[in-house]
Length: 230
Length: 401
Image 1 (spheres, rainbow over the protein chains, first blue to last red):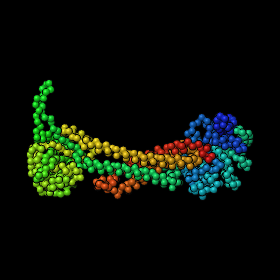
Image 2: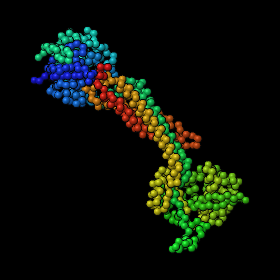
Image 3: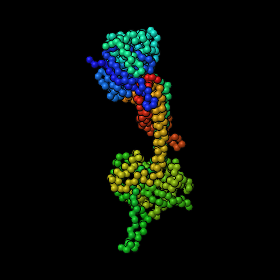
Image 4: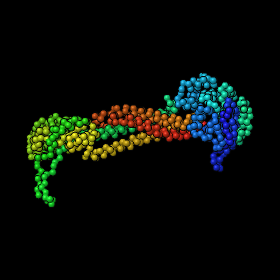
């Protein structure tokens, strides 16, 4: 069976000419289905750029990027948007919720965008996810009124809404206190176990990395070390 | 409800004060548009009513034929017949055509007339006058003679004459006095002053007199036919088309009032163009207002747009969200402005009750539907630039803000 994600010879350079700054320098890696992988590396090593490319929010300067067997380098903008909506979930460091929407409305956003309207089924799944995240009493709360931990839990629920094969988390606990961080990571680990969702979590925190079965360390735009997993 | 429309509504309701101000700005623009439409339209109506309202909208006039000339093949004129003193140009078949003309759609009155010139004498005083013979009972068919009477009656019995206040003053006339009218044919008749009118038109009040058609027949030696048929229409703007129709129907040379009224038409066109300019400026103000407000909103919501894009919202979705906001602002502002405009115009008199000195605002010419439609279209067009700008937001950069 082929890997969920395959990147090979990934190069990303910002700017051109004399101002060209290479960030990824021929990075290659794979992610298997159901893996929970920690992406480690110092600041500026290219972790965020890698997540951005894997999330189809940016294209590499060179190299190949395939997911679910589809060549994502050759795909157009609208194709990538649809692919991202159906197969990839995001959890950002700063939750990035829509402030004018309630917790539930934020969670069901990816499905509503896909369907063009808010369906009863989507609302039911959104409620279920929020209950699993321990936010049963915050379902219809304006997202701006939630605590940092609650916001991040809503962001995790939103990332899972369309049952994506891959969830990319960029420092998901970087902005949380220890208790909230532990709660968020426990939820992620549980979802990984229960639903087999693949997680790639960028972190500096060894404790978080310790919760992952596989570690990929990036240094100077290349995979410096990969351990664990299949 | 389409999801993008829900997002657009949420954005508008989440900044209530800003949205209210924006809608108010659009409403003021629409109010100006409607007010200008009502003013320009009302003014045109007023001017037309004052200038053309009392005139014949379509006129059929007998044309004088040239006097016979005896001419040699070499071109020498041997003899010319002198034009007779009696009017020779007549619409002899008028009695046949009038029922046909009355049946033409839009025709509300037909007035057969005999016109000519004469001298009115009262003692030693003499005045040159234009004489119009009208059919009794149709005195006010074209000119609202009855409405202008200040003394006596407009009723034109045999041997009665009705004339203007200025002429009455010039000849020191009073009701019931006897006058001598000598027509250009040389035929004279003694007439009794039955009524005095005042139209406000100095030339008419000082020169025009009205007698019955039978009196005019005697004066102008015209035992049958008429010299002129005046026709009034329900819509004076339909004069050109109706004149063509009457021409086709009767073969007579029917002339609409617009022929020979070029200056008036030009003035009305210039006035209408001024109105178009003012209304265009109002629309431009709306478009600029909506575009700038939405551009600001686009800038303020860049991170959210980035999140939406990252969550799988396509560029078209983002464009729709912002265009829908523009459309909703245009619709709300347009309807509010139209309602405000209508309410503001309500206290003004209707077009039938326009009086000199008052502002001739015609509430029926507010162009409410047009104002709302143009505003919505303008607001949608105004939102396209911000919408395209929003759709181009790079999610990576925006989320990182």
